[in-house]
Length: 257
Length: 106
Image 1 (tube, rainbow over the protein chains, first blue to last red):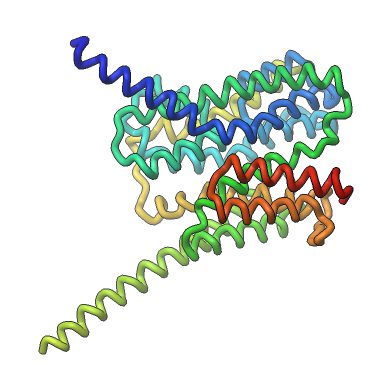
Image 2: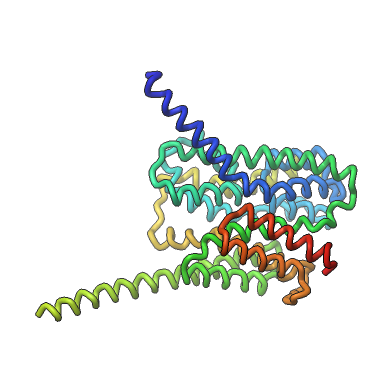
């Protein structure tokens, strides 16, 4: 029994460490945000303890920032919670994307995996899944990515809370650009086909056009427009190539006759 | 503001969205076109976050060569297209932004 378990535990540990390692570049991009979140918390009206608890329990970067913005604007509790839900809807699309990969796992795995489903872990895990078709230890890779991201997020929040007390003007350093540049680095590797280029351009243009919509709803509208465009082009491309393949067969049959 | 209620409410709003489809996975199957559509999700969502952040960094549309967010973002796109390495893209993009915004004072 132990002889069969030993190589499995090695594979698990390797997958766990590989997951953590693959997430390091994304963690680097998240560091300024964790620090910035912690720094902004107290000026926005969230206590130091509240900021730490939010990073530990909610663990959703974009929502946490928006919550701070709404808190400082004096928004009511239901508004903040409803906004969190809307901003996080994209995670449902990520979850849908991962469903074929977690279908075989028990709920005791699915629950922590769902809790750890951030933009960064999704990016690290989905690019890994593209390369590894069938690997029994893939959920350990996911767990490694999640825990690396999570511990860094909580640590950086704590660091930010401390720094915020020391340097109250840190928020003017332009660290908001770190999220943009990280996301650009994540999007570009996808740009390998005309449907993908078109989807991204439509999504970006629509995001600008709908930026005035309340509760960040424009983000969902823009993404859906991009997805619809990309999907249409992809299906059209598939149909055209199928027709070309058929006509190719017809011609070779004619030539044979 | 009751912080316990705030954090609990945000936890429910975040976790339920992330867990719903995982919870029912295995009982729900997606048609192939939906899987194709989901492949477009990460790049379109991320672009929808980035485009307003760099083209309207201060709330108003600012499509100008004097906009350091936009210029640094274009630098990052070029670096990512050439190197396809995330860490290089982040470092060069941030360096470009810091230089434009604080070095040149754009």
